[in-house]
Length: 316
Image 1: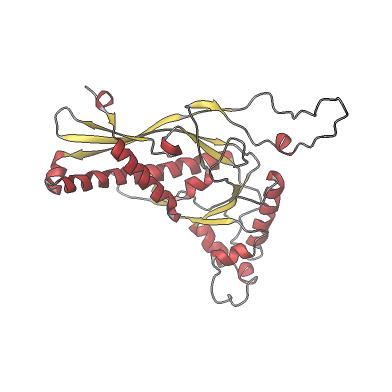
Image 2 (image 1 turned 90 degrees about the vertical axis):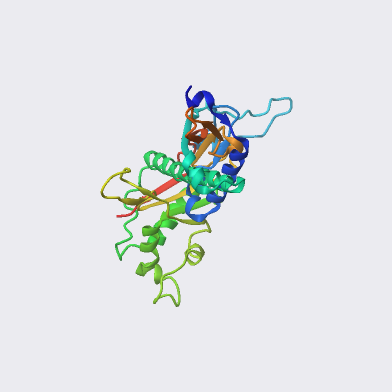
């Protein structure tokens, strides 16, 4: 009998994993995916959603009504795009010998199990962030002539202001604007001579994020992302690391607790518990009794829902 036949939802570990995932997403290093593609809970794995469309969002109407006449009716596209959530799963095992090593007390067994669930949740969170960034970068092309911040003659803040001006016109809002960049991009910007020249008393030190935000066209939510992944597989002689958001700056709209109508650039449609990628934890025992397995099981899809709601710079 296979594990698919014997696995059952473990509600206690599901709640534990959901709590761990929320803790990780609250940490600055792991919040990137929740910013880039906020989760929209949906009742089923397939359905329709609203694409934030320029024509529909900014259409103006003559609302004057003659006596006895019908009201002006809003017009929309004939059909909405659809989503289809895809199944995902990530598993971890506990060998019986590990339980022997941990000790025979209920507390020791609980701590071992929770440690394993925390490990698989952390890996799922990093994998989720990588999937989101990969989908975003595949969908949004870098703006030409932007991101050349190593050039001392170029002012990075001028470029960011231009992007903010364009974004606010594209979306009709200055609310819920985020800027994400990786550590290298932030390091380049904060030490740039034209950036430092904007501030008094910082000629001998780089600026900080709050100082940058005060000098932008309008305030935004700034995030320096540092989620790191291995670019080589297990067992390779040479291990290479890279940041998931490597040399990229993303300026975009992202509405917390999104609906199908808001102008967020991207969304993740999920049928997981409370809209969390964790979904459920399923547990099973091997037939030979030598080990047990626990896997996270969730369903999700990433969609670009605002085609003009993100601007991308790639550093050169």
